[in-house]
Length: 203
Image (cartoon, rainbow, N blue to C red; front, side, top):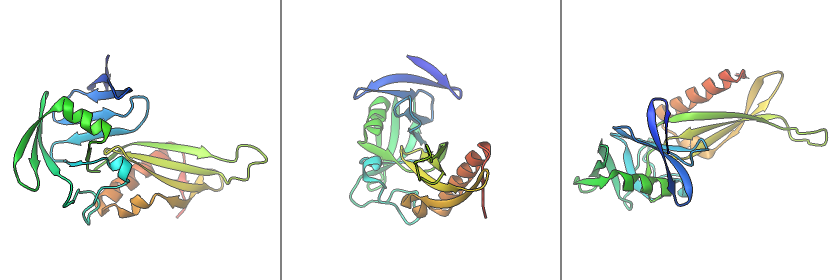
């Protein structure tokens, strides 16, 4: 099965019993995990790939910047070229080049054998919750979830005040570890999603 999204051709494959959307375009690897949810992975030339599942670990062994992989124990590669059938990688430890089968690399990314570094948040959801009825004492709040290109998601919660005005409540700890550049991209994505849904954040 094939469909198109944002000008990119997407093939639907079954990986470990899950229907995954797989981009077929050049110069990048794109995976919808699964195709019915907003979680995705996108790897572009110049990005890094590392052994292990960042979604299971919670975070990579990050460098000080927070958005680059820096591990002395896990193999890490820079992505040099993404072709229709093969991907060329550079081992950061040995500086040696490796050519991988693209479909096999996509499978490893989808199943957590490999992960990529966090660089962008292309999808953001805004959900209002509570109270559900008169007996529910949950204060009304709005949760904003930004989905990273590494398959992780990062949430921030706001109290809902008067009308559509929001006040910061709490957020995932990982957000505080972002580099300045990554945090700026996160903040812009969150602000844009809230504005699109008609909310404003109190100063």
